[in-house]
Length: 178
Image (cartoon, rainbow, N blue to C red; front, side):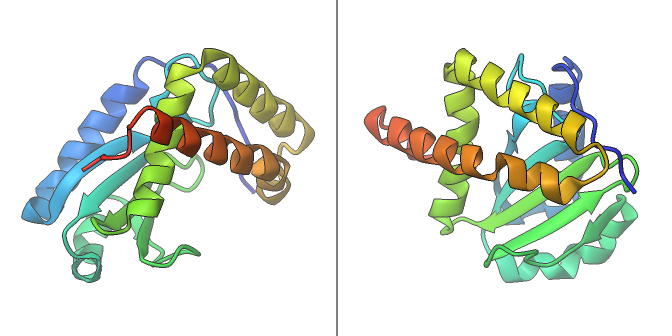
């Protein structure tokens, strides 16, 4: 059973992302088009679970499966699409979990933009970031050992956040992330 921990923003999170991004680049090489730090650990000042979310964008998603052994050697468990068509999802660490990889092919624009839009929207809207952080703290206190209830408790908020972020991106012409 994994205890849900939400903590204050840690300045080392971007450094942990960069270190891991370099490791992933070394494995995937020319297949990578871009690699982004996403999720709450990418937003300065927001409270978050200390799990670094990474979004590599690749040329060919079907090729990624042949890197599963090399990713395993780096400490990642391959979980296939894991509920999102066209994605390759990897997790690193069990208790505590340290990293998530959400790998998408370059033409998976909706999924790519959705993740990056939320990140950029939260960076640009400090009040929303604080509100979202407070919700996560509250849910972690209410469901300290129940990740499913924690995620369910965020679901409606996150869906509205995504809608707001995508609308904001369109209005500000921030839709080209490749």
